[in-house]
Length: 194
Image (cartoon, rainbow, N blue to C red):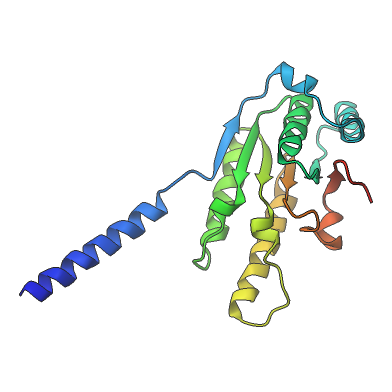
């Protein structure tokens, strides 16, 4: 009888831990943009690039989707560039930590991404994916079943990005997290230009 109670208590603890992990930390935070964000000090190369993009947006091209990849080696600089651009677009940022969105359970990452894109669309916010190498860093040639799902998550992310009518910004710690095909979708902005 004691063994049965011990097993039952362990099972209840395990189920409770799973339930709590499903409802844990939010994936993203809304960052309210102010007029001061358009005055942020960022490097002149990036600022010139962003001003040109914003000018194109304001000249009647507001239906155009803006896709930016921030590649400054300084994370603080990437955040400032995202705020500067969001201020130019007069929209708040929906800053997403992709490392919190990625799940080890098959299909869960896709559900989390759906929630993120739906929330940003509902509130007319600019999506800003911080630490995007959590997703793009795992792309590989398919050697086993886990690699297959990692590649599917990237493809799913890209399909959501293409459908999303708003602007999407991403930032990676690894400057090479986007390869050629992905860089065709995103404009690279930052200190290092190729």
